[in-house]
Image (tube, rainbow, N blue to C red; front, side):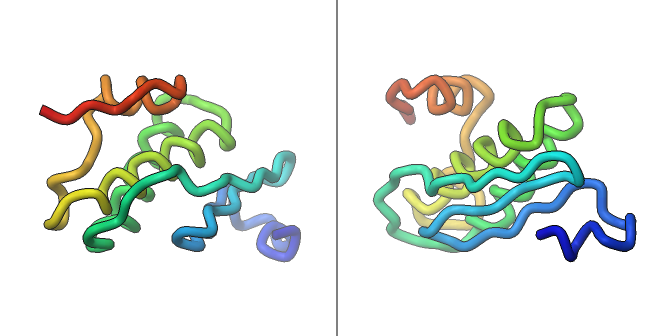
Amino acid sequence: MDLLFKKGKAGLIAVKDGAKGASVGSPEVFASIPAFPCTCVDPVGAGDAFNAAFLCGILEGKEVEECGRMGAVAGALATETYGDTEGYPSREQMEAALKGQAVIYR
């Protein structure tokens, strides 16, 4: 990842690797993010969910590792339902998942 920061153009990066997790970083911090456990039924929308949650974390001023964990949760949960956005977590579901609590859909 150092190569991505050498020219000073990137401030934050996230490299997604599906079920293997992701790597996120800034010039100062690098973190490997494990995949969030899920039962995949449809992978459509997982990448967009990861990106949306990662960016949400950035806009909320969270550390890059927390942003990566948010992305992993959203990406995984997106695969547990059919459709592009139906599995995206609410704020409450995201917070529960980040705390290691069960994520309940109604």
